[in-house]
Image 1 (cartoon, rainbow, N blue to C red):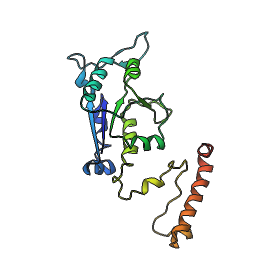
Image 2: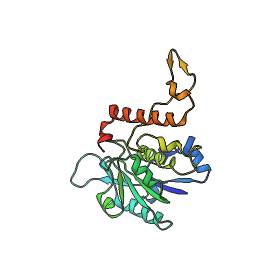
Image 3: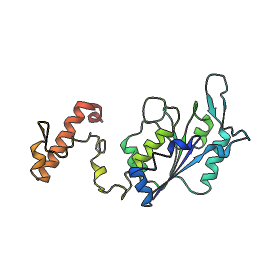
Image 4: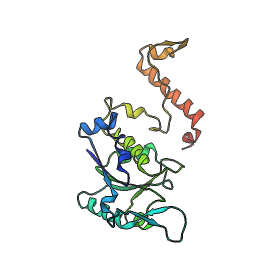
Length: 226
């Protein structure tokens, strides 16, 4: 089982992503647990303060080190984390290989940045892994954390009804997934490739592999270089 703790200042943003579909079933099966912790529980005063102005001036607030350190310390007293992850746009780009690696963990802690981010000393003293989901900036790390948890959670054995499904996803072999079809075989004059209807698994597998290579060359040639 994989246990994931998430520290956030707006836990309400994460209510829906884990309450439906595959993530819901993963938790109901006891294969995944996700707990969201409101950072304001560790606020420094009665005003529930968790952020302050940045030294040196400039627009935007910074998440203070004390609440985050106290939150991490308390959570670490209950379990040992395989990784303490900070969601940040200046981190390494999240990819399928990272998802595969993290899915093998037992305990993960994810820190959601907000405002202008977190105090650098927390990054230096606590964070073991930083992740970005793309070259853009969100209002906070919550939506990015939901993306990462979903990508990890679906890889846990037993989560998907067909465990081989994840093996053929895009990026698993640095290739994009091939095109897929369902009924009807003829949709407004556009027909399913005949090879998919002939019932020969070997030929279908070969066709799908060829299509994956062709699609990757056309759409993501950089993956072929890797």
